[in-house]
Length: 79
Image (cartoon, rainbow, N blue to C red):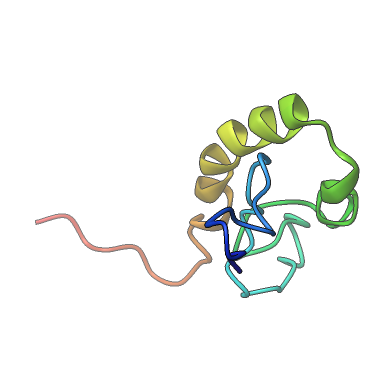
């Protein structure tokens, strides 16, 4: 939203949430399959300092591999 003087009314200098609107907690890993945050981190996001948000944002991509583990089934035969 912009005022008549051209300045944004709703502009903020904070880190945007990593939420991608796929809000499902993985049953084993207990992290959201969309943004990789824990339920506690999601609930406390608005209370975190900018520094804590930045640190968490940097850590989140490394959590993706926790959801990509092999689930079972037959192994691919060597060729």
